[in-house]
Image 1 (cartoon, helix red, strand yellow):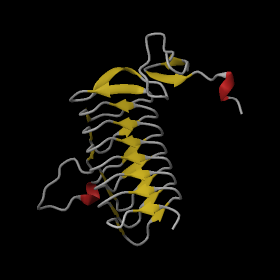
Image 2 (cartoon, rainbow, N blue to C red):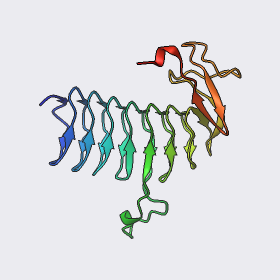
Image 3 (tube, rainbow, N blue to C red):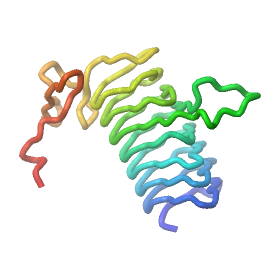
Length: 192
């Protein structure tokens, strides 16, 4: 075993867990799920069935990553944030055939207690504030919060809010508008 799982963790058959991943108390990894290397899975987390978690993701305590959700690499899921998977659930009617795919792209942050409504795509390095209710797609680098979540600016790859000049005051990265979206301006340090 090239990963760590606390003795209280339940790992079903047909699961792939990457090297260096750590899974903490009372979590459950359901069949068909794939967890990349170097992830941190907090206490009381449920993953699956059939969920893909990219490398380097950090999923804090009390999060359920349901079927239909995909996390690219380096996604941060804050404590007790919520994914939904069906728009019109009923206890007495099985509706899993209506599950809508949710895609969280590389480097995105989902703040504590936020809710991601199924069928949404959260863009690369986007930042969803704590307690936000996300009902629509989120562009790359967008900062959103509120209920319903609305845009409140842009964030850098390093997570800092960008000023009006679209240059990060911490790491110096520069960004440019492309229509209603933002893209990173390549620098000499990005060259291979």
